[in-house]
Image 1 (cartoon, helix red, strand yellow):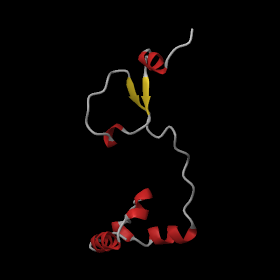
Image 2 (image 1 turned 90 degrees about the horizontal axis):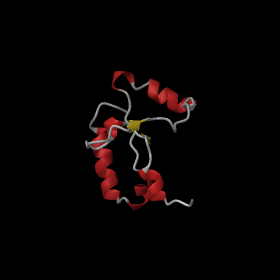
Image 3 (image 1 turned 180 degrees about the vertical axis):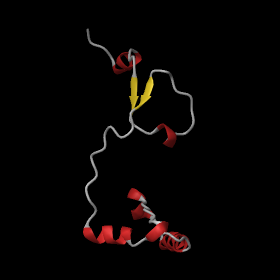
Length: 93
């Protein structure tokens, strides 16, 4: 017989949650929730030569990877300068 989406998810015996539990906001989860983290990830490709050299030249302090995603088109020059100033104060590249 035809069934609705809500009926289908209401009958699930197990929920596979595609995230890391330690990145989630603390909340109770049911015993049938299983965090499968990384299931959707592809194996990493090697870094381009210039990027690998930059990473390797960072020494003990390492690097910081900072991204704004799609918000980058809405950020003001003032905020860009504040972020750049803050990042300039830490020992990482």
